[in-house]
Length: 280
Image (cartoon, helix red, strand yellow):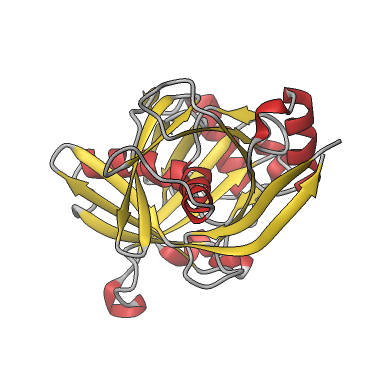
């Protein structure tokens, strides 16, 4: 047993307790895979990260990302939350950008005023969703056959598929049957109506990871990064837009998407809620 510096941060919100929480453990090089997985399961958060010394000399730090069930090669809110925690703890990047090493390789992160943004990694799976999987998703979301207007694999390492509905309220009203969607990571998106709902955001999103200790994610960087490549690639979104996520959970997540040339950046605010030590 030994002590580790620890932070718990809230990602995609400027207000504590309104975003997506993340546990961050520093100096975790001595921890075994089993110990990391056990601690992540114990926190019962959507993700827990462990910061280690980088293996790639181009990286500023290395991070391992665990859900309550398994390890992920990449996830968005853990990327921004870990970077915020690392910087706040005195980390100094080698260059102008922060370079994170993780399972998918090197991820670029940059400061955007008081917020952070990561470069969306390439999709490892895209294209239409198979009919049998779509049938499971439809049953799991309790939707009529014509309610889903578009669907696409948007997997950048976290296994996401995404479906689009016509109306924001349809997204907010969902009461999923997770037993129908076990093993799937499903994102649901619909546009805001600016006349009825305002212009604070342009899309409403919910993210379901059936079977996980946290079956709905309050604000999801990897999903929104994958969906951004889909939406922007098909001309379904402007070059810059804001996503609202977490409202049905009492949260107020805001995810910013910006296309700059050929690059898509996904960002938001991060605040620290807990700063101290833990014993593992």
